[in-house]
Image (cartoon, rainbow, N blue to C red; front, side, top):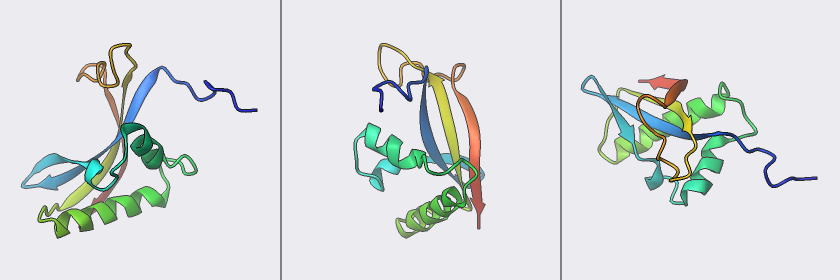
Length: 111
């Protein structure tokens, strides 16, 4: 039986893509490739059938690098990182601060 709060957690999480260009990491906007609501993007990027070390994430990083390059943004490296922060009653990103956000590396693709 499925319970409505079966997978409830006390943290929010988001998969973040970043590209390395001219020695600086820049955030890659995933909404241009996943034109859905925030919740739908979270489900699609979570890929719950796979763990964080799955080759699927490496393929995602490679594909992002290719699509970004086709759009004129060439990166020497693309990395995927999970960011997690405490949930807040004031909104999804309200607790997303430098001090309260943890980052966990998933994969990095280098040209």
